Length: 265
Image (cartoon, one colour):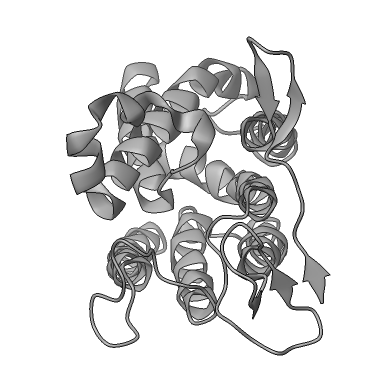
C-alpha cells in the first residue's frame, strides 16, 4: 500500500507556479513531435506529408487539444459548475480536460489543416495515432500526481490512499490507464504502422478502437465523477463516450476497406 503525498506543483515562484500537469502536456507534445517527424522521414519519403508539416501543424494541435479538451470537459462533465463560475473555464492549469473533446478538437484542426495544405488526411492522422499514446501516458501520470480521477476502493497489495479524498485504499486507476492507453497502445499501433504493406488509415482506426476498449476496461476500476455519478447502473459517462467512439472507428474501418478494395481492383 502506498500513501499519495505528491504535490501537484513542482516549483512555486510566487507569481508563477510550474505544475506537473502543464509539464505533462509540454513533454507529450515535444516527444510526440520529434517521434512523428522521425516516422515521416522513415516511412513517408514518397508521400506528400513531410516532416516540416508537423512543425507547421503543431500550433493547430495545441489549439485543438486545449480548446477541444477544455470545452469537452465543461460540456460533458461539469456544465452546471462552469455556468455558475464561467471564469474558471480558463483555469486549465488546475486540471479538467476531456480526452474525447480533445480528440474532436484535433480532428477538426486536422480537417482544416489538410485542406489548407493539400495533403492526405489519413496519412497525417496515422502519424498522430502513432504519437498520441505518448501524450496520453504523460497525461495519466499527471492525473496520478494530481490525485484526480481516483480508483475504486480495493484491498490489493498495490493500492493507494489519497488522503485529500479519503483514507480508503484504492486502485491506482490512473496508472492502469497510463499503462494501457500509453505503453500498450503505443506498442500495438506502432507495430501495425511499421508493417511493410500497411493500409493507410488503419492506424487511425486502431487508435480510436483500442483506446476506447482500454478506457472502458479502466473505467471499471475508476470512481465516476462525483457530480455526475453513473449514467446507468455501473455505466459511466466515459464508457458511453468511448462506445460512441468505437462506433465512429467502425465507420472509419468500413471506409478504409472500401478505399483499399477500390485500389486493388
